[in-house]
Image 1 (cartoon, rainbow, N blue to C red):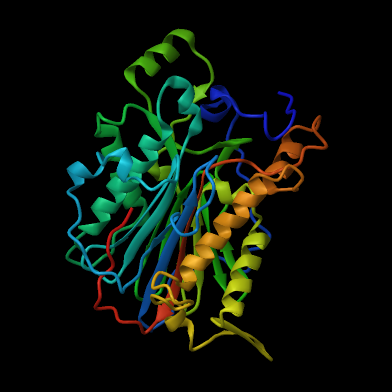
Image 2: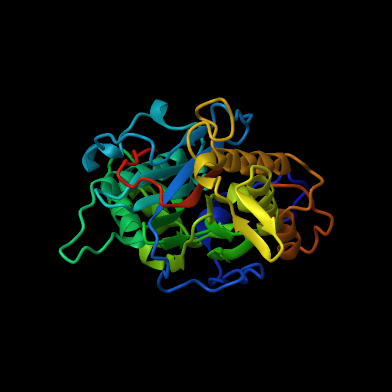
Length: 397
């Protein structure tokens, strides 16, 4: 399929929702500096200062509006019931297009659950709003996690289990006719243990002191065809039975890659949809994080390396980086990443990660350049040691 330029080129339904080739996992990142840790060694109590930013494709980024603030300084609220959570009106959704996200305290525990989801745009061709699946999935995951009760052994919820509950409820929800989505879901505990379930080409980055500790690998079946959860209407199933075609993509939460990691004071986590990863390399993202953490004084350069400064806790609290109560370091990081990805997506001359993939899969387009215009969604979490764990995190979508 010839690709003329980044503005006119778009995948059709067949490329994004049907797989005609066997799975071919992307190569592992060369930027990861350590393997996932099986168990944390930190004995310190960690809390997580969190913010999200987003921008729908075609919209201008408004840094004052396209941001959500989370943190242990936010008061708790009674969560929606699981049955009602998937039916929020579209007016109540963040203006993130077909991307969605959630963050919540994990029941009454000191852990948090968070994630992002990216609705599969190919369903537009079938008269289905891809946003319904992604937003419904995040709503159901948030609602389940927010009322989670530990079992008798005190075991925390698993990231894949949260994804499974969200998916099962979307399948049962008749108001969501059809659709598909990638997703990355995480559970972070006060002991520094992080578990992540990643399905598709959304993903996450773990950074410590200007070094990438882990960079998730995309799950794909071919170019621009990620693993994805899906729901097809009876009419779609009948149509496929009659006319055939490629094998519909039908992945499940059990197919998600699950990794565990050890977090420490000052670590930065980035969870994002492919609107970020198609436009920014892991090195680009690392540069943004390092620049902001050092410029604001959260990390300092010492003779023997980079260290977390004593100012980190203050910088991640309300008004920590400015007079406005909403200005926090984590919000600045999230907004900066969305802004950078947005700029690249609209630049026809940038040699983006997406452009490199196009040239790799389509050798007859050796001069293809530019970013990929897409919805963009980022959730940033900063691990902070010794913060007050008695104040509850409010569930938020």
